[in-house]
Image (cartoon, rainbow, N blue to C red; front, side, top):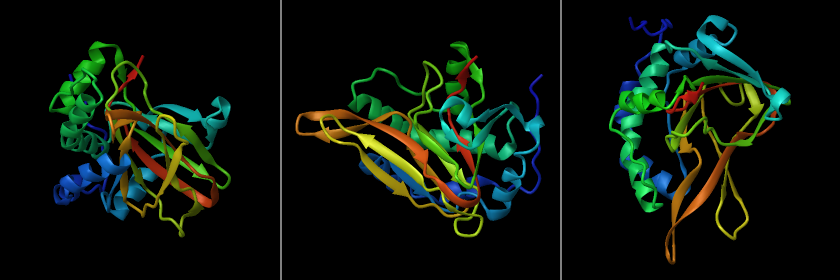
Length: 247
């Protein structure tokens, strides 16, 4: 029997915000920069409610202290199934809006993989390959914490885009702690981009690589993401990764 999604009270429906997004503009920004901001994706009370789950272990399958693994400083927890309803909703409603871009990117880069139209179908592909552990996560940073540049791959099957939602208010809850994206193009030095976010904003970005048009067609640019050092306060982030992890 399928378990119901974990109940988290007072959560607004992200479908309303998602339906209002200009997805043509989102795709254009991703093509141009490898990232796009989705403003006001979650309401302030939803952000607060999600952040408040962090000290409640019953919602999570594991906890990672970054310093123990050389990932930076700070910590995060991976949600367990069943996911909180709003986390499940974000996964299932954002995914189909990104599939056309993901398939177009793979075609441009000469990759054979194509992604099915629904997230349920994509998870079936992951689970058949042994990638059964949920990957949505909550991250917590305090003063002095940071997240080293990295890529969230987790197994053979990787959806090439992911989402991060800021659950804390810059300037009020914390200072510093900017979302950072770097891009390495062949024979060029890495380019860094800082993406400013407000409370409830999300950034959708490339997980691993994206196509960039050159004089001889498309080539692959390699991307990594992280968080700069927090100067003060506490910062919570919701991470939405669409592929599950290998067991």
